Length: 316
Ligand SMILES: [Ca+2]
Ligand SMILES: [Ca+2]
Ligand SMILES: [Ca+2]
Image 1 (cartoon, protein in one colour):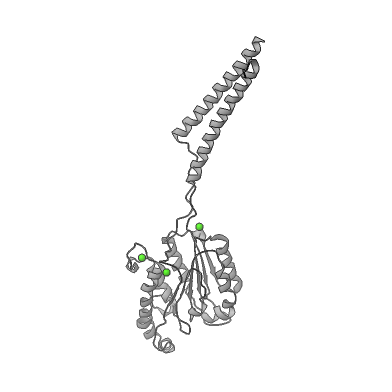
Image 2: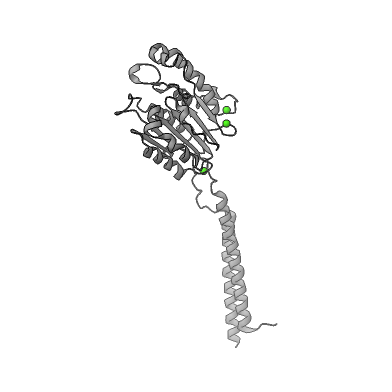
């Protein structure tokens, strides 16, 4: 069909507009794909809670360690790129509510590929009985979405606090069931303040000598194997002679740290440093050229279309 006059001009104008818009849309889609490619992947972050109770006004002897174990952990995690705002401290009276609050913090922040670390330091009988540990912790710990769970318990007989779960996890206790862990106090003037095993363990995580398979980082498993004999040696050679009553209580056998390793392979505490800043919206020279070309083409086609319309109109 032969087009004449204003109709032909309008169709040409509309065609030009369509082509121009098509090119502009293509350019924008191209740009959005570039931006989406720049978005960071889901990072492996670390989230930690540290629960420590030093004073026991109603039961047990006080443990005035100055929350040294939390501080040791915090120092270690900072060296492993953990972010400060991913770590919470719960110092003071520990209750079930405090423990559940700590778990809520982990649940609300950690996703499946994040590492979560739950550390608790207190008297064993306090955790078991006053906090009613076994009645709430195992079930709530088990439903957390992370597949990278770490639980470390520093107390007497702490093996009893480890949940019996089949999910992916590493659970660590400073002593077997029925054994007595040792926490050094400043007034005793011995080298280590706080839980002895935890002292060696948090140090081992940063000690290249503990890197048994020489892959460049110390896994939790390697740190445990490195720290356990050091911990037992210290208690045997330093604490027992200084505190014969404790040695008698232990039958002169240092407590055995416990590792429940249900994590496939080596567990690394190294995490991604966090979401990298999103790259600023900067166009490449090619993108700028494409957009400018599209704009010029659109303008030329529009002017041509209008020119043809006016010319046809002037002929009638
Ligand atoms: Ca993540
Ligand atoms: Ca290693
Ligand atoms: Ca493992």
